[in-house]
Amino acid sequence: MKSLEIVGFKRANLGKKDAKAIRLESYVPCVLYGGAEQVHFSAPAILFRELLYTPEVHIVDLNVEGTHYSAIVQDAQFHPVNEMLLHVDFLELQEGKEVKMDVPVKYVGVSPGVLAGGKLVSKLRKIKVRATPENLPEYVEVDISELALGKSIKVNKVVPNNYTILTNEQAPIATVAIPRALKGQMSADK
Image (cartoon, rainbow, N blue to C red; front, side):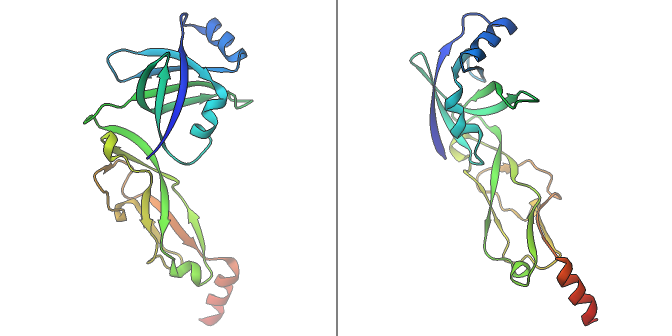
């Protein structure tokens, strides 16, 4: 799994007024929990671009005033109107302790339904998994080589590898939609 470093500075004062002042300086208030103690810190907003605005998952190497922590993003809050990053929650990774995380889906193979003129429609972009930090997958592979026209592939067809899938096993991951032109041809053939 990819790693990314974020350098932060401890926050002396906690609260709305102080958080607002931090944001005005282009910093994001953050909290790290899951370890021995909670660590409140702030980090430059620019550092979160590669972490949050990408479909990939990263393990974050947090450097808070010289103390290093290994963590994952648990939650990120954005302003409802201007989409400004308001707050980020990190969960500290501990060896042997399982964590839950949303992992992106990666399609493998070629669908016969798509070759026949259908359109692959992605229903789930991420699947929730539970695993120890060393077994966290970078992505979940979904084999679509048997996906025919009008058919869908569900979460229960995914074979987990050293992790547990928490997403509902009946949820569809992808379907092959039949375009209107093909529907017309199919009814004309009957």
